[in-house]
Length: 279
Image (tube, rainbow, N blue to C red; front, side, top):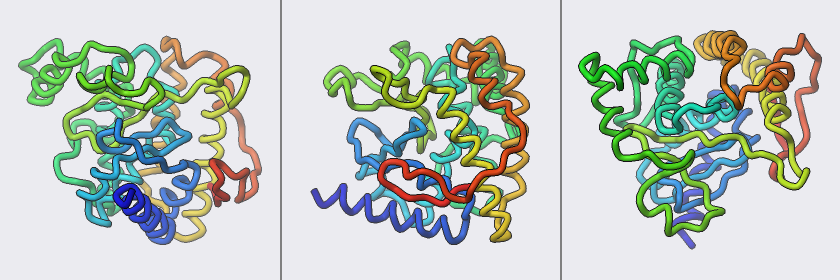
């Protein structure tokens, strides 16, 4: 009982730190309701919840928790939870991590040791990185990254959220994600509405786009908007509109994302019981 509580308290403190020092990431984080889950090795998000393993949180310094939380919230900020389509979950997670981590380091955040960082991928979208990783897996001699990813993929040919051999023993309702080398926070697909309850994937994508715009405004007012984050968001959105062939990225999803300027309040509806400031 104490360990989950301790992990939750440390996460709440890191959220507050991010809100004060890095308001772009801190503002967005309040959209995610934190939940302790032993089925998650590190952290993970589906754009609605922030899942964390209390034992993993206990291994991190305060600065590393803040960096890992910022990493997690950038997955839905960049729409990674709605853009996977038919891509391999494990390679998609690696590509998303390679896209996110450089901008966090540039923003002055601290990440745990061994995370996925490669200057070859700096400024690329997750889709572009995924394609390169796929090519390198098919050409093992092209880079050391390919060797790592090929060994990694040899272990898993399971379903979309396969994690390890113990998954079959877990409750089917428990979230699980593919293990990736250097993965500190994974991304799950956005949840589909059940029995007509809940937002569609397109609606979730639209809500996150509005939230990101609001968070940028909050950070600008505080004079703390990382330049690299804006460039990455713009580049990811431009590339996303070109990626028509993915089954999950349907035309309705693109239409929902591709709307013109809108004026929004700096507050929006409470999510998961939390009242939030947003971008």
